[in-house]
Image (cartoon, rainbow, N blue to C red; front, side, top):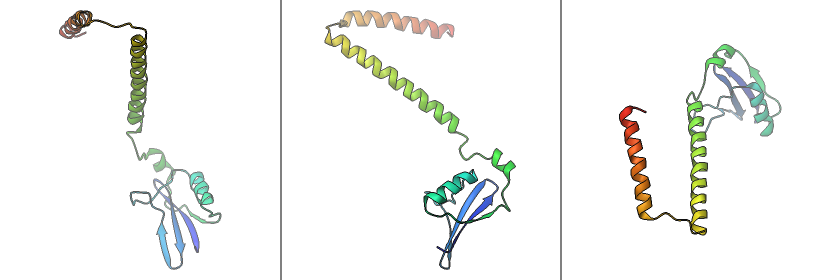
Length: 133
């Protein structure tokens, strides 16, 4: 390796490595140039891979653009869905645990009792659907 450069971009910082006569940009898994949002993150990354000395080019860096650029605007929605899924999984597992516990001690519901409960529940649900509540 001859040198490394951190190049400022409007949306973050890129890394260019020069080795021999070849010059390559650091790429992400999908083949796109890897951009870091913070210079401190680039420094940590380069030190971790054994590069302690590098040039920094701030010519194209635009801090205002960086604040308005988001790579994944759907992240908040995805996180809400993930948390909801975890909460549902926790609830479901608790229901299964309670059901198994009931079986162990012999607490069961007959088919007739289950049908009766379900008819009442269905009637309540249908009434709520008709009234919009």
